[in-house]
Image 1 (spheres, rainbow, N blue to C red):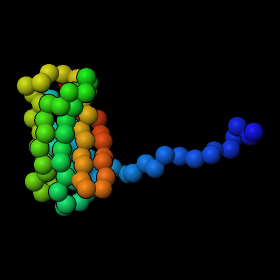
Image 2 (tube, one colour):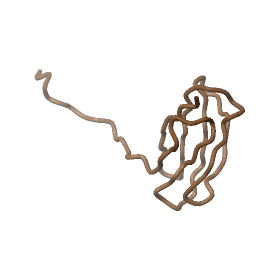
Image 3 (spheres, rainbow, N blue to C red):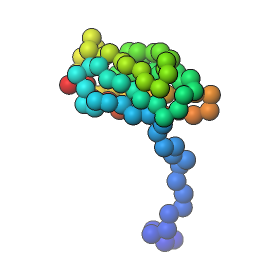
Length: 90
């Protein structure tokens, strides 16, 4: 056994979207690098879905100002892939 040898990595996909501003006051934009349709889900720190929508073009604005401060997970899904980013609401 050679501990310096790496035996494998999980298949990690590079994100196709950016969340800004991050940290945010609750309103942020999701900017996609692709024009295809994605389902967007935003979950709070407990894993509860607070927003569920579909992107409309390459930029989608999300308003979490009614949900309070914290760390949220933004998840984009299409037919073949899932991408995840975190956003901080201050």
